Length: 91
Image 1 (tube, rainbow, N blue to C red):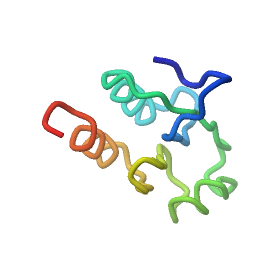
Image 2 (cartoon, rainbow, N blue to C red):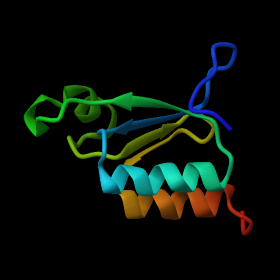
Image 3 (spheres, helix red, strand yellow):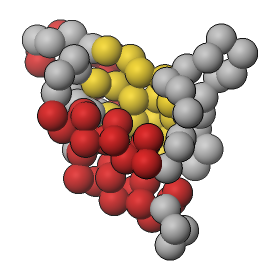
């Protein structure tokens, strides 16, 4: 499992902040399911997170885009539930 390797283009993109506990919760879940993903670190200033606003409609992180399913979402609890339901043992 890796965040990104030069020869692959992971289908999951995680928009996150450095040392954000909510973002780290999602990272732990991605690692638990051994999912490759790419991290996009965003601006610390909430008002400058235009890239996150464009993809999710909100400026909050974490946010993910899963090209496998066409899902874009934010809020760590929602993302963890989504990953459990989509990639977990019950999926």
